[in-house]
Structures are given as C-alpha cells and as structure tokens.
Amino acid sequence: MAYKKVAGKYNGQIKEVTLGTGEKAVTLGGKKVLPFHSFDGNTGNPPAIGLEITDVAPEEWNEGVKALYADVLGDAAAWAKFIEKTYAPDFICLRFAGADPDGLNKSVAECVETAKAVAEATALPLVIAGCKNDEKDGQLFSAVAEALAGKNILLLAAKEENYKTVGAAGTLAYQQKVAAESSVDINLAKQLNILMQQLGVKADSMVMNPGCAAVGYGFEYLASTLDRIILAALGQNDETLQLPIITPVSFETWNVKESMATEADEPAWGSAEERGIHIEIVTAAAALVCGADAVVVRHPKSLAVLRTFVGSLLGTGLH
Image 1: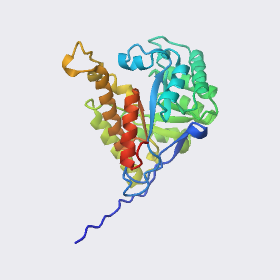
Image 2: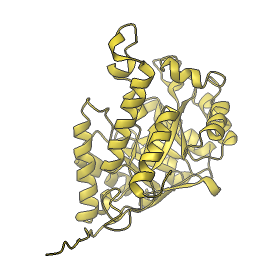
Image 3: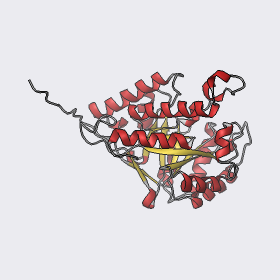
Image 4: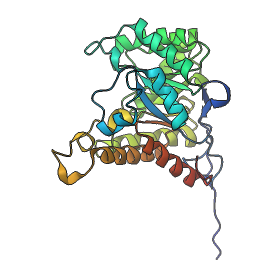
C-alpha cells in the first residue's frame, strides 16, 4: 500500500503582533500549525532574532563579547547604531541594567533620555527590558512608553506584581506592546494573560514571556511548558494562550557556569566565549522549535547561526 501523507490540522491560530514602524517593523506569530511544520500548513511569520544591548557598559559580560563592541560600550545609542549597520538583527533589546536600585540606581529620567537616544539612532524595532526590580521597572516602563509614543516598542515585561502599572501605561495610554512574564507554568501564563485582558489590554498588543532557562539548567521545564501552551492554543483553540512568545535567551545562558568559568579555572573546557555561544545557540534553537516566535541573544555569531537554522527549517535559505 502506498504511503499517504496526512496533514496535521488544528482549530486555533497564534495571533499576529507587530513591533516597530516603517520598513523594518517585525510581525510575530500567525502560525496555524506546530513550529516549523510547513508540511502541515501555514507556519506564520518567521521567528525574529534580536541582539541585546545595555544602557551602561556591562562589566560582567564575557571579555570576547565586550571586545566586539569596545568602541561603543557605555553609549547605548552608538551601540544600537553599530549593531543595526553591522549585524542587522530583526530587533534590538535595550536592557536597563543601570536602573537597578542595588546597583548604579540610575534615575528613571536618565533611562528615558537613553531610550530616546537609542530610538533616534536606529530604525529597528525596540524591546525594552528592565532591571528585575518590579517597582522600579513599573516606573521605568511607564516613563519610556510615554517618551517613545508612536515607536510601537515592546515592554519586556509585565509581571503579576506590576502588570497594572505596565499594562495601563504601555498599551492603554501610549499604545505600545507589552509582554506578560510568568514563571515557566502554563497556568500562571494563562492567568496573567487573562488579568491583562481584563485590564483592557487587547490581544494584538500582547506577547508572552513564559520564562527561560539555559539548557542543562531546567530547560526541560520550559520545553514542556512551551509545548503545552502551543498545543492548547492550536489544538484546543484556547484564545487566552494564542499569543506570540518571546524568549530572552541571553538573560540566562551567559550566567551559567559553563559560560562564566574562565579558561584559567577550567582549561579543559576551552574558550569561554565559544562555550557561551554554543549554550546560547542550543538554548535559542530549542526554544524556537518549542514555539518561541522571537528570541533575544547576545553574540552576533549566535544571530548568524540561528538565522541559518531558521532558514533551513523553513526552506527559505538564510532568514
């Protein structure tokens, strides 16, 4: 008997969310089938890959990565301009590490001026990440959302502790996009999505960040969570989970021992920079095949490899 291929069919579809403006705007989501299953149907928009920058010179970053940006570290606007011209990622993630109250504690006003300078320096869509202090991030996101009104930025992210502040300012007042961040649990992700929408945030202004973990450091929990979200969204037509997913890979992968251990401490492990790249690529690739619509990475080599990876799976060549 001849083999007859049967296409997988699903009732749901991931909604589309657009970041940025003009020719370089990026649209996430849209898939009606499992990630990269083009043989079954519409895979939606190709995943977006962004590069991370920080508002202050990141002293803790790997020396090899810092060397790539030696001339622009400490000047976020120049850094963004250099990245757009040299590497052309799909978007830039500006992380306000300097706002941390336990660190430099830069004022919200200082951060706003940095955000405005970066927005003027690049035409790429901007993802704005905070300092992991919920109260400070709420203030920061509100102010940046107002200052960059019309830029269609993504605020990464609103959490249960500050979603009212971030959601109200980011989308209701200034029509920006916002990511709902939960802790690697489908029920928590769904609950926060519902709370955001009850607040008045429209689905086409939201993406999800269900959390992240580096490979070898609990990634299996993230993988299973992403799988369950995608299957519920598509197979069960659960509208509360039919949102694009962003995974900030670089936030986790460069902080594990395999990336941080120096070559003096672990000579048998080889180059620390190469180790970091490998962990970043493997984590990001796994997140993409599990359903992420966008990933944030730190190293340009990771960006290049992931573009080839995505293009190969979609049969489009280089993405």
